[in-house]
Length: 148
Image 1: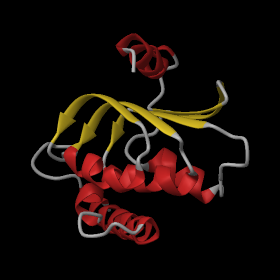
Image 2: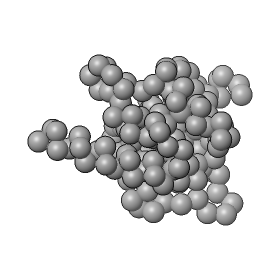
Image 3: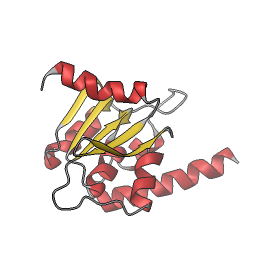
Image 4: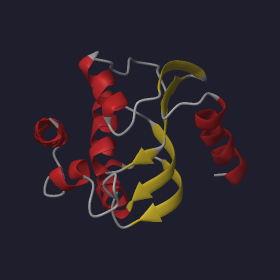
């Protein structure tokens, strides 16, 4: 893919001041400025699903394995991100979703950069997206309890 096209897609995040944008047939159908997997969780909670004839492009600030699993459940056809993990790329070998990225890291780090992101950690041992979504929800519940 032409690197300028990738840059154009990624520029949407900056120009619109968003962390996540979902495009269907060149029309923005969803955007968020929330961090982490929250935007993709919100799309799942809204029961957003790809319809026949849709072509969904996800532009997201970070794509780890957990985010990739949620994108798979939504029915995303292509993903553009500035940052992805080797964990996500390894999982994507079974999905074959075009995943265009700028930087590759071994895994997504947690917010204070002291280790692995709890979401990435929670899905490391599964390749079932439904189970991955459940592990993600469980990890978020634990994080919410810790922050209280």
